[in-house]
Amino acid sequence: MLAFGTGRNVTDTDPTTTATDTMWGVWDNSAITATASTVTIGVPPFSLGVINLGSDTTRPTALIQQTPTVDRTDSDGKKFYDVSRNGVTYTSDATTKRGWYIDWPVAGLRVLHNHDPIQR
Image 1 (tube, one colour):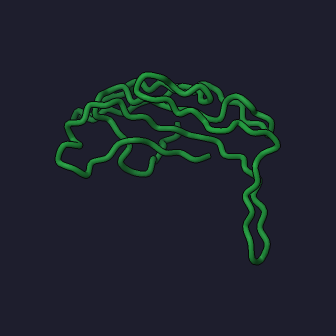
Image 2 (image 1 turned 30 degrees about the vertical axis):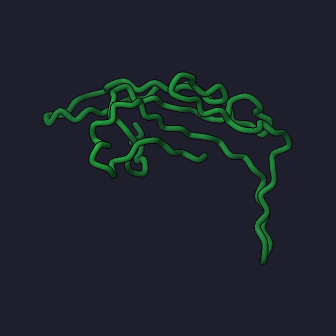
């Protein structure tokens, strides 16, 4: 599983950006073999080609949408989100769904650090 997201806070205008940012989890089931001198990354027994991650107007077709909702707000106004658990079937012959994505529900939310999920 490769998890990554959009968002940055590098330039002066980044904090005011209101674009919807997204986090993705994409399953990579490439076959990896290693010897003392080489590492070979093979393709699975099928090929999905390029995974469409969507755009500003379309959403991914090979990924299952997860939906965040506010779980609680602390005394400083910091919001904590709970995320849906829509199932994704990961099997060696999964040829349609390759992972999940989350569109952050509030303009300006973004991924700036490695994610640190809290399990309940």
